[in-house]
Image 1 (cartoon, rainbow, N blue to C red):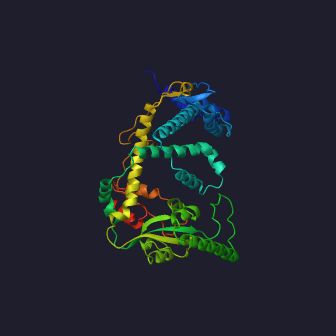
Image 2 (image 1 turned 90 degrees about the vertical axis):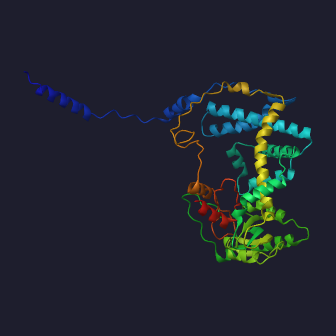
Image 3 (image 1 turned 30 degrees about the horizontal axis):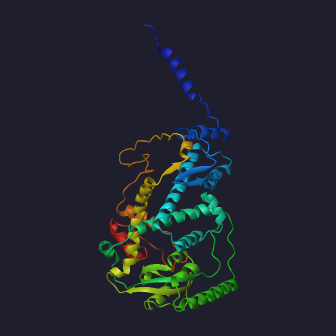
Amino acid sequence: MRSLYPLSVSFLIAALAGACTDPPKPAKASKEDLAKIEKEGGDKAADTVLGAIPKGSIAKVGTVDIPNEAFASIYDLKVKKYTDRGRDIPSSADRRYRKSIAERLIYHEVLAQEAKELGVEFDKAALEARESQQRRGIRDWEKHLSRRGETETSLRDMYVAELREKAILGKKGLLEVKPEEIEADYEKIKDNWKSDKPRVRASHILIPIGPKKERRPHGKAEEPEASDEDRAKWETEAKAKADELHKAALVEGADFAGIATESSTGPSAAEGGDIGIFTADRMAEEFSAAAFAMKVGDISKPVKTKFGFHIIKVTGSWGPGPLPKEALEDQIVNRLEQRKLHQGRRELKEKLLEKYEVVDNIKPTLGPEPERKRAKSPRGHGEGDGHGHGAKMKLGGKAAAAKGLKAVKKEDGDPSAKKPEVTAKPEGKSPAPADKELAEKKAAKDG
C-alpha cells in the first residue's frame, strides 16, 4: 500500500503557511468617506425627496393665512445649526423640522381663534413672569436662543400658546379642583407628612455676598482668592441692599412674593421666595434660629448665613405630628390643576384640530412617510432596541428611590446647610420636596 505520510506533511506545511499570513489591514476612512457614508448610508433609511417650500402661505386656518416669513424665521435657524458646522441638513431632519414647525404655527393660530371666539385672554402677568424666569442665570441670551433654534418672538409665541390653552380650559371649567378631590388627595398623602419635630413654612429674599462664582472651564487656572478688603466691601454692599429690601417689605400692603420674585436669587425667586415646609435641622442654623422664633406673618431683619443675607417671612407653623389639610391644600390644588391641565391639553388639541378647517401647504413638500424598521426586543427588555433604549420600565424599591434622588439638583443659595434630598413618589402619594427630612425617611423605608 502506498504511504500517505509525505502527502500529509505537505498539506500541513501549506496550511500552516496560510495561517501565518497576515490578513489585509483595512485602510482608515478619510473625512470625505465618512461624510459620504453619513449622507448616503446613515440617513438613507429615513431619506426622502422633499419638495420646495411654498413662497407664500405655508398654511391656512379658516380664512387666516400663515405667511412663509413666520415659518422661515424658525426653519432657517434650525438649518443654520447644520450649515454653521459645514454640513447639509439631512433630509430626515429637514422633513422633521418642516412638519413640526408647520404644525406648531397652525395650532397657535387655532388657539388664537378659539380664544377670540370664547372671549378669553391669556394671563399677561404670567407671560412676563415666565420670560423673566427663563432668562435667569443665562448670560448670553442671544446665544441661548440660537442654540435652541428659536427667536425671541417664536419663544414668546410658544409661551402664549400654553397660556391660551390654560385660559380656554379654565373657561370651559376643566381645571376646577373640587373640595372632594382635595380631601381624597390629602388622605393619600397625609401619612408622608408626619414628624416628631415642629415645622414651619417660609419664604425668603436672598441677597448673596459678592459676585456669583462662575463654573471654571476645564484647563483654566483658578482665580486668586478675594482679599479681606474685597470681602468686607461685598458684605457691606449686600447688607445695604438687604436693609433696603427689608424696609420695602415692611411697608403696609407690600407684596413680599413680588419683591422676592424681582430681587431674590436662586430658583425659589420664581416661586415668590417660597421654600416650603421644613424642620429646623434642614436649614442653616442661623436661618432656622430666626425662622422658628417668629410668628406666622412676621418678617425678619436680614439674617446672615454662608449663602448671603436672608429676609425671612414665616407663612405657616405646626407642631409635631401630622400636618392639617390646610397646610398642604395649596400644594394639593396646584398638583391637581397641573394634572388636569396636562390631560386637558391633549384632548383640547385633538378637538380643536377637528373643529377648524386647516390647509397645510407644507405637508405636500414632505413626501411619503419614511419607513422605519423596528428592532425586535429580547424578552425582559421591554419595548425598545433590546438595550433599554426607548423602553419604558417600571422601577420599584431601591431602584425607584435612586432614580428620584438622582434627579435632584441643589438650589444655588438654598439656606440649607445639608444637601437636599427627595424620594421617588410612591403610587398615589405625592410628598412635596420641601419636607426633605420626611422624604428622606420615606425613601429609606420604601427602599
